[in-house]
Structures are given as structure tokens and as C-alpha cells.
Image (cartoon, rainbow, N blue to C red):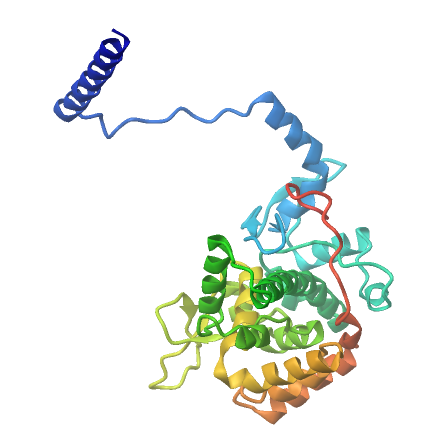
Length: 356
């Protein structure tokens, strides 16, 4: 009796489904269906008010919020200029080099103290440079603004690489111990090998590529390639490392490109994307094999990875060859960038709110 009842229920349910499908086919839903406007509920509003003071400067400067090491960053604002009210209710434009410099001073962002190991680098991630960098007449101040903007981005990318490197070492050790890796770890290794252009299973080569870029070297190259943030490519395309592209990827055509040349300077959605691409370029392109070999030897010797030594391998980065290397060496020396190779980002307060 019970079996007949259950079969009857199943038959009835099946008939209902078939009927609904038939109705949907005969009378399809309208393509003009609209969704109601989103409403900001009370808990969301309360949370917004709670973090308003923290996020206000971040949003005004197009700062990027980093959720966690190894994950993608999302831009809080891609706008170049945002009107805001100061305590005196006076409308001001925040996204200028001068205003940004004042913000750095207000939060105690001091490069000399960081070089001395006194404080960590604030987790301040700008989506783009101020458009008026060239308007800063004092060279020392312009340099400081540039370095303070780019430094957290380089450290963030290096932290992402370190996280991948730690996981790679862990999985390598587990395999050597005869442990069978679960599917998620095997898939991760495949994706990592493709990203770094390494044959699947070649862990030795992966370990030589999945490694950091010295902060001093990256800062010197960013300064040289972007004209301290004043070049057209850095202003219009967030391209602070002057990477060329010959593909259909988004890019800017050099104004004085020679006849017959087809290259463009690759453009990026944010400064962080530019730094990530720069690191991947040096970690994968055959022109920088010597850099990777020297860095790997430093690891074997137990010495720190320093920019002053690795810049000697960058003769292929620019058509100027050794003159380019000499310029990088001068930038590191004059601006005492060696002290930033050991700099670290401050710890995030939470994973869900911007930290200034």
C-alpha cells in the first residue's frame, strides 16, 4: 500500500514538472523583466558608517583593498578625482600629488624610519598614480611620493609569490615522502606550471622561477621606466615598467615609434597589475635566465636576495644595455634603496576592510 502511494506521488510530481515546462515553452518569459533597485539595509548602513573614517582616504585615492595574500585585489575606486568634505565642510580635490603627500605624512609613512627597521610599510595600495606628478617642482618630494606609492605594491606582489613558493615547497616535500596529493593540489601545480611556463612536473625549474623580486631593484626600474611617474605610459596605462607587447593586448603606441615597428607599451587596469606582470616577466622570459640563476645561487648560499647584485643581469631589459644597468645602480645608491630590501607590509587589521 505504501509503495503504491509513493509511486502515485512521484507520478504526480513528474506530471506537474512536465506541465510547467510545456507552459514555459508556449508562453516564454518576457525578456524585459527588470530587477528591483537594491536597497541598503540597516546592518549594511551601520557597517558602512563604522568604516567610513578608515575608508574615506582610501576611496578618494583609488586605493585597492587586498583581501588576502595570493588572492586578487579589487579596486575600491577607479576615479581619478573625487570631491570630499574636510572637517570644515570645504570641498577639496583629494587625488593630487600634493594632497597625497599630506596623507602620507598624516599617517606617519616615513621611508627613513622604514629603512631603519622602525616601522612596517602601511597597506596603502593606489590603483593609479596622481596625474600631476610633474607639477611637483621639488625633485626630492616627487621621488618620495613615487616610492611611497609603489613600495606597498611591490611588497604585496612579493608576498603573493612567497605564499605560492611556500605551498610549492610543502607539496614537493610531501611528494618526496611518498604522499599522494589530492586533486586540488595536483590541479594547483598544473596551473602554477602553466603560469610560469614550466613543463608539468619540473619542480626544480618551478622553484627557480617562483621567487621574489628585490624591492630596491623593482623600485629603481619603476622609477627609470616611468620617469618617476610622469611618463605618458604610466599616467594613461599604469605601465610603470615599460613592458612591450606585440599581441592584441591593450597597449599604448609610442608616439615616436620607428616605421615598421609594431610593438606597443602594455597598459594595465591598475598599478598592482603592472607590478604583477613585471614580476612574471622576469620570472619566465628566457632573457632573464641569468637573473633567476643568480637568485637561486643566493638561496643556496643562504644569503638575502638583494637588488644591487641582480641588476647586473638586466642588460637585456633595455636597448641601452649596460648604460641602463648603470642608471639603475645610481638610482639605488643615490636614494639608498638597499635599506628597503628588508621592508615588510604591516599586518592587515581584517580581511574585509581597507587599512590605512
